[in-house]
Length: 357
Image (spheres, rainbow, N blue to C red):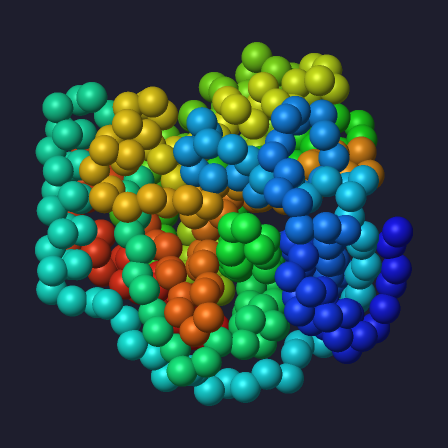
């Protein structure tokens, strides 16, 4: 069942759903004004069995781990239109966080290990991340969601909850894959980061340009067996919140309707959140990062809903428990990387995420 409501009624409904502790998700697609809520009829934990199923999928980074599904046939649905920005407090919560010299040194050491490893020619790129725990005086999750919706118009913004898993939310600029009824495919190569200083006319260094080309080449190579009529547009500079990235749009057509699972498995994890070659970079990450990414840099979105699939890479995300937020931030390491600069990039990304708390 799908119902439309005004935006105030929408948030009243989803707050009632949250208080009943059933699994739900609230999401808004990039550059859209429609916000949708999907909630289960029970608190059951459903794991994906096939990419032919329908519902909202939430997948971890490690492709060998179970993927969670809010199944369409066990969910209710309602939506609303966001007509204007939400009136939310501009005051940032008071918070304490774990930024200390030990955390910095540990991350820089791992980054340097990756740089040294890349210089042995075993990998071209490795994406390394870290977690940062933030304790706030109070976290009102729907207020945080509204701030994300205001700030990240061209991102996939979501709030996902399951009583057996926890609460995650984020605003990701990166599309993994979209496929419509006519089997038209859209994906993107997104890499390189710098702060937005009022203009899109910026200079990109060789490191970022090379990193972006790696991602583009990887995607093109990995979709060619299952698609035809492949086209690219870019790279060009795009804005996500207060950060800039290099983006190449990629489009194609699926050769057959039953190839969705093949494509997802071929693309995830992409070089934008893992590295090249995929298997070697994944092995390095799992061995050296010293923490579990869980759903950070996994993917999420609509799977076979209304004959369409829209999946996004889970970046710019956080896990919230009571008044604590676990932030997840990372960056791509190449042979041009400098460990101190990579640390600074994660700090900048974390500061931006803290602004919505």
